[in-house]
Image (tube, rainbow, N blue to C red):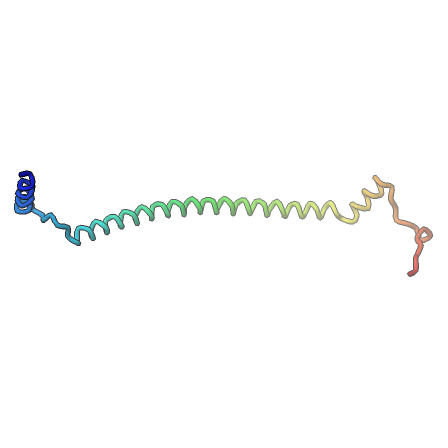
Length: 111
C-alpha cells in the first residue's frame, strides 16, 4: 500500500511540478560555470594581494641593498684613508720605533 502511495505521489509531482524531476545538462553546466567564475574571482583577489605583499618586500629589500652599498662605499673610503703609506710609516715610527734602514745596515744575500 505504501508503494502505491509513493507511485501516486511521484506521478502527481511530475504532472504538477513546474520542472521535470530528471536532471538536464544545462543547469549543471550553468552551475559549474558559476562556480568556476567564483573560484577564478577569488583566485584573482588572492594573487593580487600576494603580488602587492611581495612587491612591498621587494621595495624594502632594494632600499636595504642601497643602504648596504652606501655603507660599503664608506668603508672602502675609510680603509683607503687608514692604509695610506704615509700613515703606516708614521704609526710604525711612533709606536714601534721602526725606521728605514741605512745603506750600511742593508746586507745583500746572493743566491
